[in-house]
Image 1 (cartoon, helix red, strand yellow):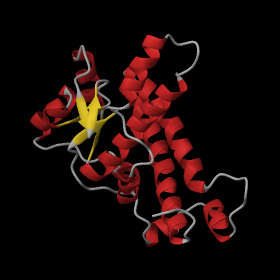
Image 2 (cartoon, helix red, strand yellow; image 1 turned 120 degrees about the horizontal axis):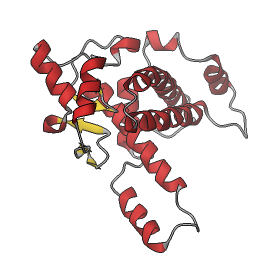
Image 3 (cartoon, helix red, strand yellow; image 1 turned 180 degrees about the vertical axis):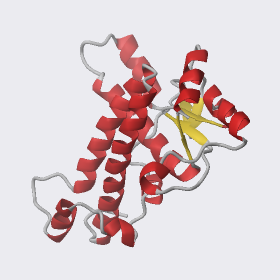
Length: 216
């Protein structure tokens, strides 16, 4: 699978436009006819799409229908991965705003940000909760710090959901940089860490909602 991905990365010259509710000119998210050559090549060679990459950690047996950072995902895990990837881009654009930018560049960045997802949107949380539901299996794997916060919220400390969301964003930043440098092996390795942060964020969010610590 890695060899096919590397081959596809070598052959492409420009990243095609992908989509996740909004355009993504960087090619981070691909679906439909916009999938990469390694994905279509895999289908032609094996006879079916690759299995969802989330299966490596969370046992997803569904076939991939889209790509995020060049990895194949099913629709459920793909929507979560896509929202995470594009949210990181949006956050990175916000960080680049400042007095050192010319008015023209800052205006261009603001226009670009309008095409990216807002992390406060309901769809953002929905994708996260759907990809990593808080079932019996998950409850046994929630971090102790999350349960401690739910039992006794501490003023001045960030809620577990916000903390894990920040961790996921940090991993996404490294994944984006690895993807841009075509370091497939590193993207695959980091995805496992990203899924861990995403799952803990989803479970923390669900528990905070159960405890009425966060609006539904």
